[in-house]
Length: 331
Image (tube, rainbow, N blue to C red; front, side):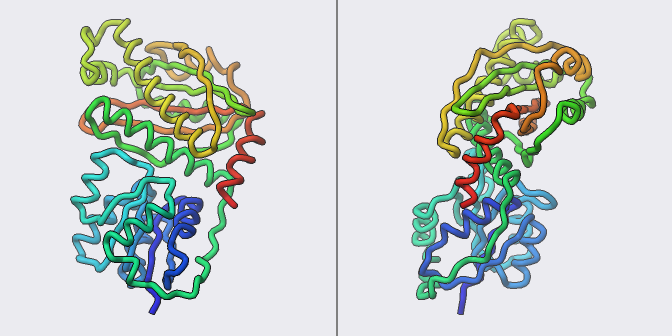
């Protein structure tokens, strides 16, 4: 009898990659779930004896799925597959009953090693090398999954440097006109004032700017975590912004370059504005931006009043190269 396998991930690309890495000799029946709620329902129906579970998902995230499995004592062996590679994320999923953790993007060797280590591989040997169900992936989904993995790399570096846990959202990826970009920035209007920094980047056929919006209420907490003196000093605030940008922007771009096999060069960071409203920031800098592919991530730190928004804005001329590079992930 085929072993029921559940792949639970909101990214179609991640589901496709996961299915491809499963052992060819396995006799399995694969079910897909696009969020945690669908995943729990599939497990209740007996479709997830082995579960490959993402953490950052809409409706119900991976942590909530693990809690529900424990609470209901559901028969599922769970392997977490996530771009959030923070040590504390590993510890939390293990405490919630996950067998193990694999970082994205997944590899066949990593999957085989874990399946052999826990004796799962032998449960379904002797299959007929059947093909997994087809998964349709579009370029926006692929781009969002690339952003998800890069986001996790940046959060892990920040977490290690500050000894904190960085809470991660689902990245928002869209091709935007400048008017839509200003609407995106205005989503931060609930905060009285922000300070902003930008840093240009360029690679072969790809260029853009990274924009870091630092909520002003976050400065003092961040300065204390960085062990900087005089947290209310103007120079300290600028140092906080530049240090945070160096970590988040550098690690994020490295995460993208690793996945798309391309190198980026970065310019020096430039302060766009300090303690200003988002409207002011937009009006003074809107001529910098046109039609763009935007990756938007909101980083916040658990148990601290710290939030910042990272926007990666690729030029319109970059879209053909990005589409070409992403196309390799879709094949």
